[in-house]
Image (tube, rainbow, N blue to C red; front, side, top):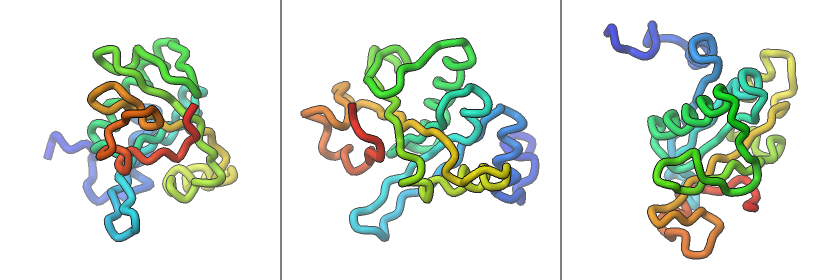
Length: 168
C-alpha cells in the first residue's frame, strides 16, 4: 500500500524505530494494556530520541490511544523545535487546547527502565547504560480540567492514567 507508514510491513521493531528516528529525529513506541495483571496495567507510549534531538527528556504518557499519544508528543516536539522552554515538574497551560492544564513530571529512569524496552535497547546498542536517559511523564487532565493528583480527578480515569512520576 502506498499510504503505509513503514515502507516494509515486515520490518523488525528495531528497524521501525530507526526509520522513525531517520525520518522525524525521534520515534514513538506504544505498549498495549495488560488485563492479565492485578490490577490491569494501562496502555502507554514513550519517545525515543527526544534527548538527542531536542536536549529534552524522553516523554511517556499513560492511558491514551497511540494516535493520541503521537499527537501530544508531536505538540511537544513542535514546541521544542520552535524554541519554547517547557517547564518540568509543575502544571502549566499552553500546550493543550482550551486552556487545559498538563504537566511534565520527572520519572526515575533506573526504577522503571523495564517499562521502556525499546528505549533501553536503543541506549544499549549505542554503547550506553540501558537506564542512561532522562524521562518525564506527560500528564493530562480529566474532562473537568483536573489533573490526576488533584482532588476531584475523575475516579474512572485514575487507573488508566497511571502515575509513575511523583506529583508536584
